[in-house]
Length: 503
Ligand code: PHE
Image 1 (cartoon, helix red, strand yellow):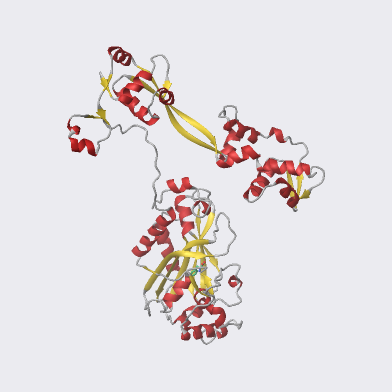
Image 2 (cartoon, rainbow, N blue to C red):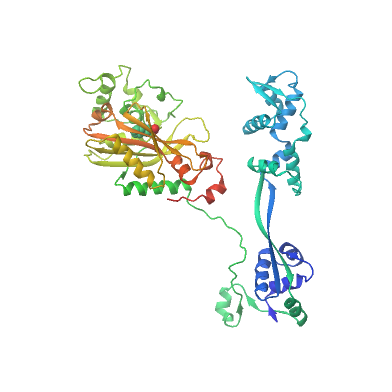
């Protein structure tokens, strides 16, 4: 009998009395495990080998798990520092204990939450008290980390292990382990003698030019053999969602707007009838530019009409804010905190000239806010801005548009809550239910622009408008629970690799 080299190696290494795993075969031959797996399947097809498969769970410390295995779990470092500082008798200031523990950054939060969870002590008005009868040597998670590190996880309590997986300190993975034994036919074949066949796995240019390809025997493909997983590039899920949003809105008859990321306060705030002493204008919310600090030109007549709206109001009963308004403030440059600056540029005619109703525009663009980072806030995010300009619009038109838009993404349970915006009346916030946590999350803000906004822009009819958060839509459609899994430095690569944008 003739067999390809790898198959012969596998056959010779296999035993009739003892199961050998692919890893064992690899250790005994010169072949790679993937090659041997393929060879074993081919031999099994010919009845020469029997293959048994077992699903194996393997456990490994993550990088963070390794660190804590070496340095101690943060909560234990905190507990030990607390004891040393005498916090078992009298509570000690948190700053002092944290300083002495050597913990910093994220590990402080980790230490504090697990310290409390494990009942190692209490934190009360900035002071930390340590339970005196805790034995830090008896920490079960520490013992479990050590067990995983040495590869012997059999004694670990399932709930402790689950917790370590949840904490991201231990990673579980599934693998199929295959083992082979020689069959009777295999033994017979070996006894009768097997030679290496000249079979070829790869066609080379040399074989083509020499004509050798005519005489060789080609190995068959085995499409069932395990193959290494390669992770190629893919379009980011947020980008995919953004493209889908654009398709949907274009399908609904909207045209795309475009404009500057850094813009004058005039377009970001003043044109929107936001008083210059409005709290949202303080630079805690907005990023101000030092260079250039001012916009070059603003349309004079429009500036004048906006100034008047702020000071005196609009129409016969106009009141205005009577608060200070200066063009100097309006010229100041910021990173836009919303893309409503684009809506202002378009509605005023500044972007593409005068518009006449009906007209619909949108953008899916980045905005920048000096927020505190958390699971639902980043310093920058994508806003789905949009507006419809038409005669006689009402709240029903607004709700109908959202219902239709979100339905395209399979979201049929949006909720509306009355809201306040300085530039729209009435105004509504939109909420959606998170598919995993069941929580109601805010997904957008909307309303009908006030006369004080529209008349200075020269718009005579109604305009309904909105700003929706692209990341929140992505959270609802792909089930991400933390916005930081989607972008930023903490992204979860596995999540991004596997998330499917479905609609
Ligand atoms: N600019 C608002 C925001 O960022 C959204 C909005 C736009 C609301 C237009 C009403 C009208 O939250």
